[in-house]
Image (cartoon, rainbow, N blue to C red; front, top):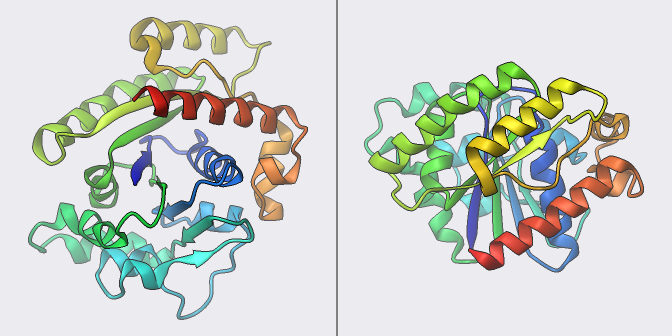
Length: 255
């Protein structure tokens, strides 16, 4: 069972889109996948067309230990693709965890009870480094960082790498940077090309060869409660995520 956090301290860089579309591609090739929506905004939950119901267990309940991880899992419309939904209550979880012993390991301990039920668990992290994100990273084998092709996103990447290394030193020595995905790339924009060149020069083969373009259909898909791979399979965005999934699997074999 491989656990991967999709993380970036900056919002709007494509974390959720990347999470649900990699998961969709993996489930399509008979891998059993669980997505954990670990963002209080609940974008992964909404993007999969899952209605937030009163009394429904969520990642908040898992993190506050008010339900088991198995009780929070729901099935999506796609075979072999399960979800632990988010809840606005998750925003308050940090306050509830702050005085807890071994508070950084709550999610790790909960997921250990799944006993290899899934091939992959993908955690969609919030755009901040708080106890929620720390729990995700402590639980994970590796991190994927979606990076929007703009200067400020690049500036924040160095800080994120420092945070990942700090967690590796203090809590999870096995944590690895699996890769950086360039998102919202525009061939017509010289800045996109400059950002790509800089990131590839500094991080080398840690940067995925596949880049995710700016695409209206990607932006539309969440409003229909579908991943872009389901919403418009032939779109440039969907085709890019298919290529990304192929590269992801190739890297998994190499690792």
